[in-house]
Image 1 (cartoon, one colour):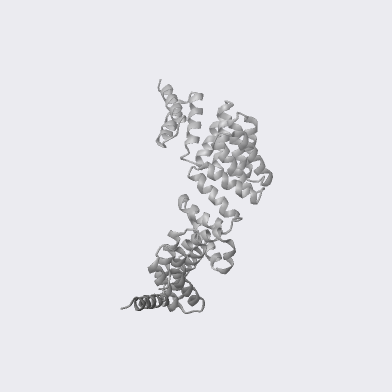
Image 2: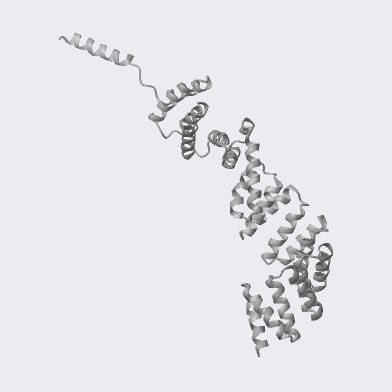
Length: 356
């Protein structure tokens, strides 16, 4: 073969190679799949998007679009798998979160749907209008949170209430219940934050003011507790429990006259509020008005037979009166109720004094 013929052959081969069509890329399959899905051809969309996934399974947008295609084709299990895979690869994909919420609603799992919707709304609030079942999921999450709180299942209540608040931040009841849940779990910082958020919605919401006062009381800030209880009573003066709590704060500040006034006010509003009888009994005990203390604390025990606080105060009253025959069985019952310190040690000391 001549040099010229060889060159012509090489050129011919190069020409044929240049004319060969390259295989479709991931982006080609993705574009074709999106077009097919938009036109309603779900079978074609799935085919194209599965081909894209085969070429690159790490592309979150491909996984999510394939999930949409399977959802449109009424194939929920495959849709869920693809959406979850896409979210593992890109948790910030709001489209996947919204669609997962829709899928969960279809499967009658409104609580899980609420959590998915909550994540979606956080990522893209504007997309909410395209998913009308969000309100249905919100209502289910609120109902579940309310039920958990009613059953004192504080830990279980928190995720439901947080889902409600992610979807409706101004939901006062959910914020208040969230504060109560954290408080009962001993997380006073989280409880305080929740109650303060309630007051940002309604500055005169008395229950939140009262509970913030209780948080302050529990953490030893009696001055702040008094202020918050007073603010609560300005908004809701007929609340017997808040009157009692203000009396308890005053008593811990050794302001007995003010404490007595609040306990008596609480009992005017609710004569069967056992804690107010205990508080008033302690005032009488500190003032050494022993007959009144005994009568008041016995009334408390009629209402709350297993109250360690009432038993301790009554036992101490008997001991200070020299009525050891009454003090001993009272302290013994107190000790069976697993009392807390420092009362446990003081009760034991008084028992020993009676024995001598």
